[in-house]
Amino acid sequence: MVVNWKNIDTVLLDMDGTLLDLHFDNYFWLTHLPRRYAQQFHRKEASVKKMIHTRLLEERGTLNWYSTDFWSTEFNIDIVALKREIKHLITKRPKTSRFLENLAIAGKQRVLVTNADHNGMQIKFTQTQIDLEVDRVISSHDYGYPKEQRAFWDHLRKEIDFDPNRTAFIDDSILVLRAAQDYGIRYLFCIAQPDSQMRENVDLDFFAIRDFDHLFDGFSRG
Image (cartoon, rainbow, N blue to C red; front, side):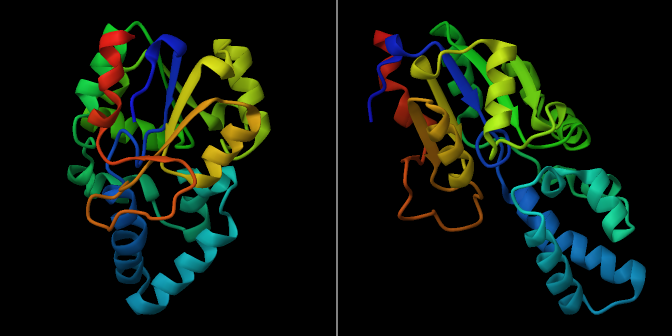
């Protein structure tokens, strides 16, 4: 797909699964946390995995789902400390830095919009410095609404004054992309393989990016 960058002023970018490999997050919640929880509380890892999975799903789509403080209280374990134990797994997706540099060269406003809380962002930023490669960083926790809810987009538009008709948004969550679509954002892209260790997603409702190079062709005319 060739993007006509002349029609785009602002690019909104998700963090986990979009700019960064989702492998760290999936490994943490599916493997590391259950293992460490089982060790600390002398439980069987299989039963812990089921308990954590069930509890996580109950908060899906809410700010709690993304809150390290909430889950630290809920599971009575230091989520941030456990994340730091495997911070070496935090990596950028391929060609992320080049893509962000090209956006800057093309004169586009680059805004990182994430549902991660500030604890989670700090770990990612310290490891990757991805915050230094964008113009703005916004967490949904500052607004009190996740990206899945329209109120988030209302708050975001007041803060950065973007034109939805001249805005592109890239995210790995179909639910979030649908919320952005309902808000009127025109150019929407999803990530085909957010986790480098898992298979590509199929039957996606939005144009799927396998490599950021797929969006590069239009820069020469942007």
